[in-house]
Image (cartoon, rainbow, N blue to C red; front, side, top):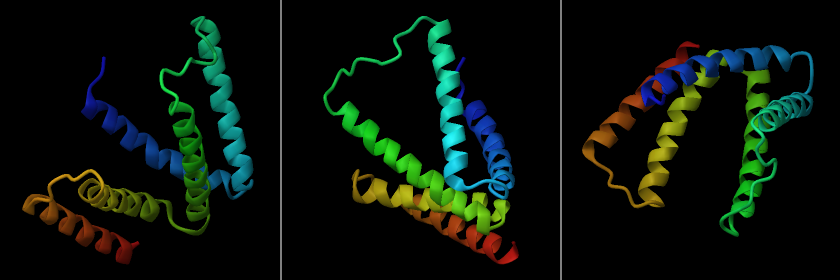
Length: 142
């Protein structure tokens, strides 16, 4: 049963809790150790899921480019996890998560317009302006 808004609410609830937990973890262990533990944990859970459901552990790629994209994705996720860890060590979790979402939205619109040739409407510009103003207020109050 898939519902976009329910999934978004669940993810929006999990994300700050996970970030807060991660900031507590990173006070005790290094970022690479935390990333390694999390990766191994995910691998074990996924392996158990695959074994229980009797599925192939290594899928066959339908396109030749899939492996290239998987490698690029792995690099991007690793960099994002490391940089996110550095921010959590040095900054307030609330400020980080609030500004992260705003900056993601602004960059997403820029990429959509410049790379994917999406239309930039007056409503989009107004929405981004409100996001920038909100981000400014969050930044100066936290």
